[in-house]
Length: 215
Image (tube, rainbow, N blue to C red; front, top):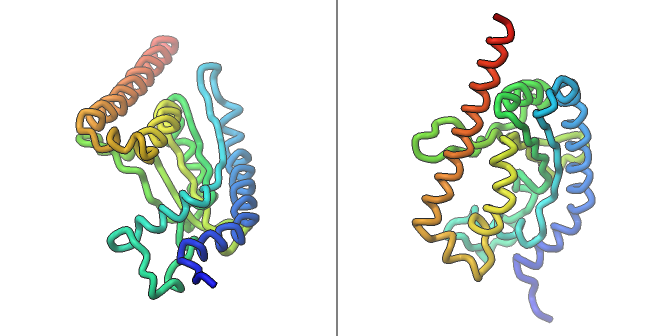
């Protein structure tokens, strides 16, 4: 009989955890939607808040755990050292908001609700000191084994990530050369800067309009 590999054991664990992972994602999505409801009720017509949940796929979970190991490999002699429960994002909820100034308000509300969760912001590029996204992880009532992740990000960037992550950040084998391309990395940074410039100018125009209406 062929001995099971570490990958085999982790796949077995993944499907054992899957019902709990789904419960965590559903629970967090419902909680977050409830907590941001007062903010959603105050939105103007041009403003948007979208809350979505997702669970990490089996192979994606294995690769994420593998990347965290020294040399990005599993030590075959110690299979007991590896568990998908060490991942922070088996279940996740993303909050997209437009315009950008709503992010602070949403973050403030959720931090008072998810006390004790660990902050792990997505860092920005180059001269952008502020993080690209706010991110937290921790446990909720739905499971004591599976951690959930909350991510709060501007809608423009979040929607771009839906394309960028599959094409560049986690590409297929056919597209791996693009992820390593220096010019492609530079163009991606330019997109991030353009989004940020658009959002800042939009916020400035809204503030100026409000100030004029009060005077």
